[in-house]
Image 1 (cartoon, rainbow, N blue to C red):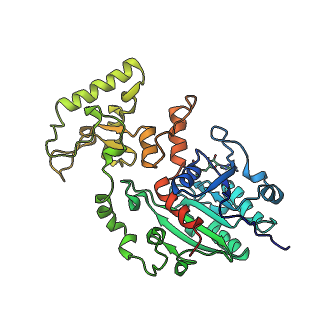
Image 2: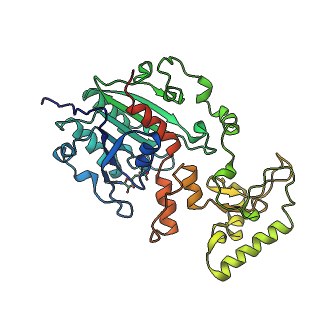
Image 3: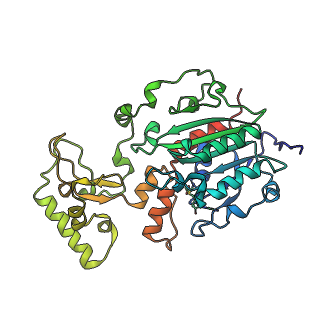
Length: 357
Ligand SMILES: C[S@@+](CC[C@H](N)C(=O)[O-])C[C@H]1O[C@@H](n2cnc3c(N)ncnc32)[C@H](O)[C@@H]1O
C-alpha cells in the first residue's frame, strides 16, 4: 500500500494526537516547548480526565485526523518493578500494541511518534515489538532515560522515552540514532555533539545534580512556619514543642475533620506503624535533624504529605493548572501520579519537532 506523507506549510501548526491523555501532561509540555502544535484529539478511557477507548480505534479513524505526530503515554503497570511484569500479555498493554499494529495499516502514518513509560519498559517484550514495528514502518528512533533531577527539579523520577521520526525526516544529532541515552545532552540544541558526558548517566552523580537544582522551598505552597522545611543551622529542637504542635494538629484533624493544611499531616499512629522501615518518597520531612548526618526518628521529622499542588509543581505544571472542584483528593493524587514531568518532556518534544539544519 502506497503511503502518503502529510505535507505542512512552515507557518501551519503540527496536528497532534494525544493518546492516554490523563490530565494533559503532553499538551502542557508542547506549550512549554513552544512547539507550534494543535492537539486535534486526546484519548483517555478514564472519563474523569477525558473519554475514548484507544482499543476500539481503527486505521481509518486514525487517518481521519490527518495528524503529523502521535504522543503516547500508555499504562505502565505491565512494566513496573513492583508489579507482576506480565508485559505484552497484560491486558493493559493491549491497546498500545494495537496502535503500533495499526501504524502499518494507515494511509498516512504519523511523521513523528513519542512514547513515555516507566524504566523497565526498555527491557520488555512490548519494547521489542515496538522497535520492530517502527523499523518496519520506516522510522528512525532515539531513546532516553531521563529524570527531572537532570533538568533543575529536585525530584528523582527517571522515565523511559522513545522518539521516532519517519524517514526521510531525521534527528538533529543523528549520531545517536538507534541508541538509548541517559543524558539530556543532545536536547540542548548543539547538533554537532557527538559524545555525551558519561557522568550524567550515573546514579552516583545525582547528589551533585541535586545541588544544582532549584531549592525545594520553591515547590512548596505553604508559608506557615510549621510547614516550612528547616534547612539552616538555626533549626529548632525537634523533640519538644514541635512534636507537641504536631500531635496537637493531629488532634485538630480528628476533631474538625480534614481541613486546609492539617489534612496533609501524616497521623502519628501511622508513623508509629511504619516504623523506620518506610521510605519517605512522597513525604516531606518538615523538620531536619539539628546536626546534619544525625539520624532522627520518623516522628521527630514532622512528616506531611506533599499537597496535590506541590506534586503538580514538581511535575512543573503551570500555575494556572487546577482540578475541577468535583475531583476528590484521592483522584487528584492518582491522576498526578500517572502524569509526567513537563520539565523533562518539553525539551524532548522541542528536540523531536525541530527540523535538523
Ligand atoms: C500513564 S497514564 C498517562 C497520563 C498522562 N500522560 C498525563 O499527563 O496525565 C495512562 C492513561 O491511560 C489511560 N488508559 C488506559 N487504557 C486506556 C485505553 N484502552 N484507552 C484509552 N485510555 C486508556 C488511563 O486512564 C490513564 O489516564
